[in-house]
Amino acid sequence: MKKEIKDLNNKLNFIQELVISLLEQQEEEWLDSTDIKQRFHFSESKLYRLRTAKAIPFTKIGNRYYYPKTYFNRLLLQQIQEDK
Picture 1 (tube, rainbow, N blue to C red):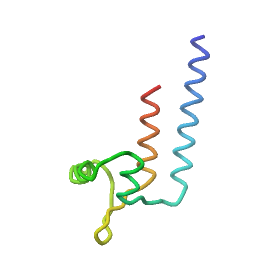
Picture 2: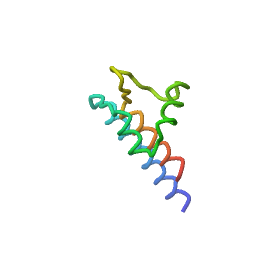
Picture 3: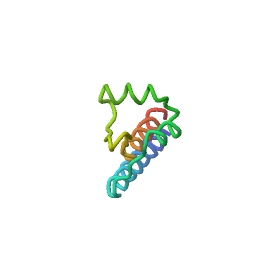
């Protein structure tokens, strides 16, 4: 039973590494603040705090903030990994 669990865990780790690798190969996609707030249920003030603390990557073009989609995809994968 332990060996089977270890094998499954190894396969899961391999799949996670593969997904991350594929995400890195894609051209970077950027999400605006509205997308982030809707997808992750963040408030405007939470995004502001994360930006000012430099806790998340972002770029500002004009009066709008944009965030790399791959960063948030990795964040979700890490949360899934921690939940298992």
